[in-house]
Image 1 (cartoon, rainbow, N blue to C red):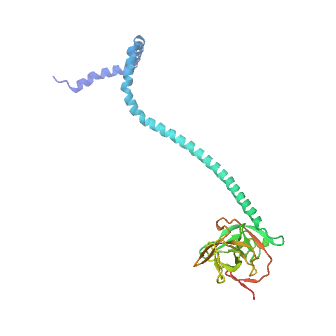
Image 2 (image 1 turned 90 degrees about the horizontal axis):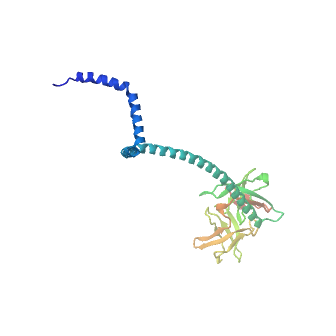
Length: 292
């Protein structure tokens, strides 16, 4: 005869109530029994423990992987934070040392530049001003630089501007605290020069390239690469003998001169007033003509 479901429920209810009432005592008894069993037969308990560990180990391994990954990620985050702090401190130290290094480099460069000017020191009767180059206005149409010296320091128009190696240009616009220097490579620059040991006369003409050209060489003049080019003293702007450069190339298109001045590392210029007769009248475009 089939037992009804209600009958089973009525039978299980007292058992459930009894189990709930004495569950604590049952757990205490089971614990005491296991402890006594462990004291009586340690081999059996150890084997049982090992069996349980062997059974539970794979599950613990699988369950511990996410936790291990989280802990590893947490440790890496802490290490990353510490590394970022150390990196920030090191970057600050690098910036501080870089500032000192740049200052040392600047002072070293200034020292070299100023010491090189001694090789071209003018006679005592010539007034000179050493000025820092503060702006490069070089472009496809003009070759000039700005220096941090002006009429306040005694700079005047058409004063020669020299580097430690040779002539760089002349002052064409003089302000109170700044001066624009027209470089010898500018298309408006024309300088009477002497070439080589034969002292052939010519005109050094800029064309906005790195190497100006020699014009108006006398017919039959022999010019060779390496010939020295210096100012001739004609025109009343520059005295004779200022070094400019050497002949770099002799071609059918013309004779090119490589200047002594280093255009890419020009930091200081020496502006010299040779107190020559004022024979030139400057034009607005930077060129000049000789007075009759």
